[in-house]
Length: 208
Image 1: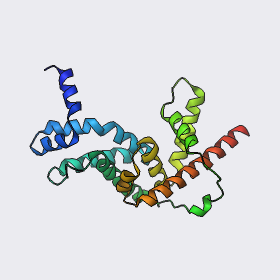
Image 2: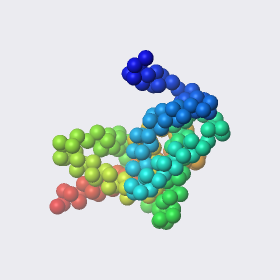
Image 3: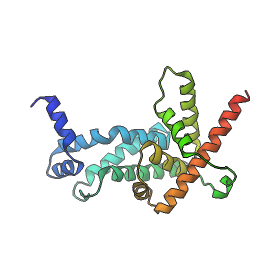
Image 4: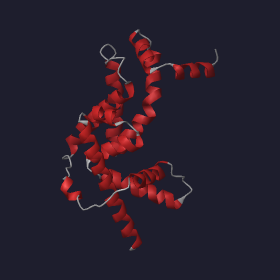
């Protein structure tokens, strides 16, 4: 079997099968799990934490915990939400050590008006797929990065999980350890917050 055939075979192996192989002593199975999720997990942490030193530490600690949980992890449980749960919790713990957790009252957003979810998705999609050659789109991406980086931790996290990682309400509830109703209300708050900052940034640019 050539390397391409082996690669295709690995892609057809489920997470549960890889975990079982790892439990049976196959270290290569663990490496395959890391390769399968390292890019998405690293991207999530970069958006969520926005500090490279913390990103690196949490990234390593997340996979170290998985490595150490060989005998205790429930293979019937989806691996991806579990990994993101570990990463999110470790990232929040790290942030609490260096700053006070930001808070926001729902009441402060009551005058934001109607918010178009489609509008937010379009903006975030533009940010995610920005071509380097498009200056105007690069400026958009920079504004989006700045707004997200400055959002309170709880709102930033749920916006990233919903629009960048596309987790379901159920999985976001598990990752953040909050009820589904809270997920929905917090996501709405995050969207409103984002749109207020986005429109304010655009007005400032137009007035220059």
